[in-house]
Length: 361
Image 1 (cartoon, rainbow, N blue to C red):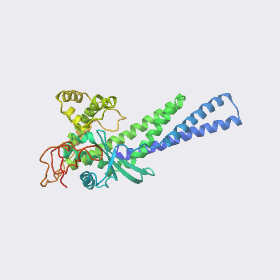
Image 2: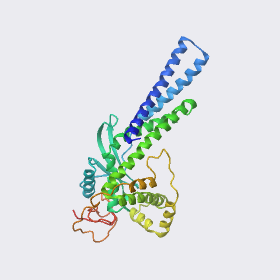
Image 3: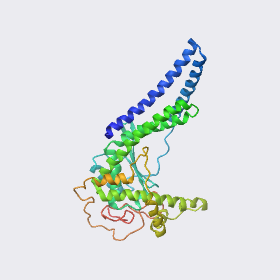
Image 4: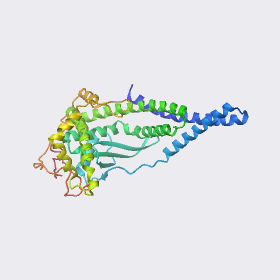
């Protein structure tokens, strides 16, 4: 089953959900009118159940429609603040034959993501955003970071984000509807079964799109860089969770602000005891579910191993560079206090982004 067919099927199921809601509303109106024409006690019971269920459905959908989108996470950085970051993203966007994002936001998460504001079921796009996690950049090499960015831009190139917003809104509407039918067991079971079907189909589309985006990353940076990046994303996420829960969370209790958040994180990652603890966590078997939005790491690594290597070298030939001395990890000057650190120049292959503190333009 192709990704396009699954996407069409997900949209069809989404439309079917609203048809099902319409049928419940129509049935409620029909039995209410029937009571005035030919009153029966049994008909009264059915009319009450359907009317209450229809009211719960309308209320749930009304609440979903009135939900306001929260503030965008992270901090937006412009070209004048991080020119090398923008240059890299725009260069990779050309490589995957897509338009670059309109906005880049740095977030305090071990993640990278893209989003697109769309209208008319994804037929029209108004704004693209890219989210880049600063904790993740503490551990990636240049080629690995390019692979991650190429993966995210691959979602744009494959038009995955065009479908993402309406499909996500459909998930929210379905889940809210099921939750709002708590007092109507029969109708709730009907919508719960439909929601599970929709989630299985739509999440299968998401998993396939992740594999397609991985192919864009491999075409940019190679199999080894993307495989290493995925493994580091998993390990860094665990390390960041450990750091925030065991250490960073205490700053609020003490009423103090840490002088160097990422310095502390780097110390934790480099600690032998913590490394052994994280290694034990990495050995635990992966759990997967048909409702997962991403394939398992093992599945992604196996798929990457079958992809061809890029014909050209993943990293451009480096001209003379001034990155001779490792320095403090890169932290955008607009987000944290301290001396200005510029984005690595991209001319030091093999070095981690936080070590390549280059100021060459």
